[in-house]
Amino acid sequence: MATARLGELLVSKGVLTDAQLVQLLDMQSRRREPIGVLAEEVFHVDPAVLEEAWSEQYASITASVDPRREMIDPSVLGTISARQAWQFRVLPMRYDGREVMVCTCQRHLPRALRFAYRHFGPSCWMVVTEPSALFDALQRHYPMGITLDEWMAA
Image (tube, rainbow, N blue to C red; front, side, top):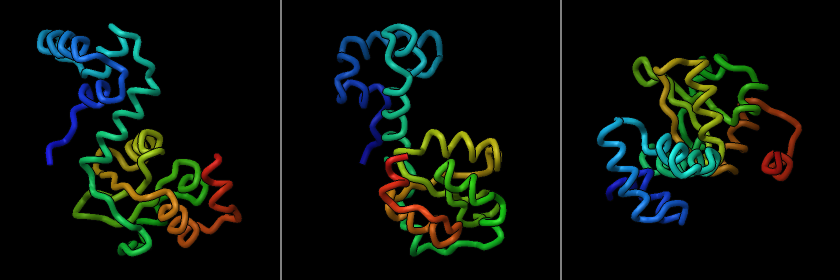
C-alpha cells in the first residue's frame, strides 16, 4: 500500500484543489521546501489543518501497537514523570537498540512528537495506538485519578 503524500491528503480533504497542488509541486521543485510550508505561504492553509493532515500521514506510515499488550521496559518509564506522560500523551515503551520507542495516539501526535524529540532527542521513534488503549496503558504505568471521558475532553 502506497503512503499518501501530504499534498494528496490536502486535496482529498478539500483543502487544496488539484490545480493548486500542481502549482505547489512546481514551486517545490524549484524551492525545495516542504509542501506544507508552501501551502501555508501561498494559499494560507491553516497550520492546524496542515498538522492534522501531517498526523494522518505519519500515522499511516508508522507502526500501530496496543501498549496494553506490548513489552514495557520499566527503566524507560522512569525517563519521564507521570505529569509529562499525561500532559504530552506519551508512553515510553522500550529501547530498540539506541532508539526509544514512544507511543501516542494520532490525535496527539504533533504535541507528543515535539515533546519526545526535545526530551529524548532524535533517537526516538513514535508508534500510534487508539486513545482508549493509550489511556489504559498510562493508567497502568502512571496512575492518575481521571476517567477516560475526562481525558478525552482535555
